[in-house]
Length: 223
Image (tube, rainbow, N blue to C red):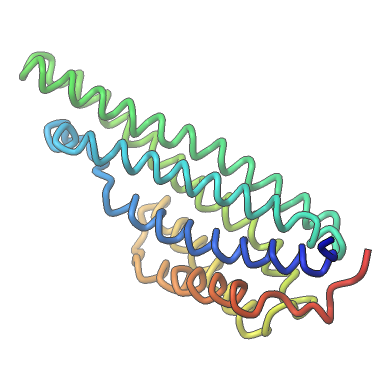
């Protein structure tokens, strides 16, 4: 019979694997996407966009799975933070579905546009812009929701020293940079995709650490 410590260790390793999986699939989906009000260009990438939607769905499921696996561990320290992460992961997943509905319908619109030729071009362009705007709003909102949710986990890592504090501090800084850059884009201010780089490094670092080292079980309270 497995002890609670073994179950926790295994779940933490699965969380690490899911973090790496989410990162790899999420990045792949971003490179596949063609989001534009240029319907001709979008129509040439409908298949790739549909794959990207599938990848995005998998990343959303991974985030929810991570929150579920972490819930009993985080609950030992803070019921509020555990619920916080789980709730925002669920909200983020729901937002992701809405985000990808915009991508899917944009693809359908582009196919209809190319089938009809240049007829009613202005109307189609207006509809395309509305789809793109809807996607961007949902996308930015989703990034902020993700950061708000996972700040609970990173704060707990820092407070209880479940991983080296340099990692948890780096995690909080990475989230701050993501939120900052997202707001800069929302308000059409100068931004840089490089501000997302620390978060990418974090996903690889933290995922690998949880698989190899796990959490500092000396600080894990018994139930």
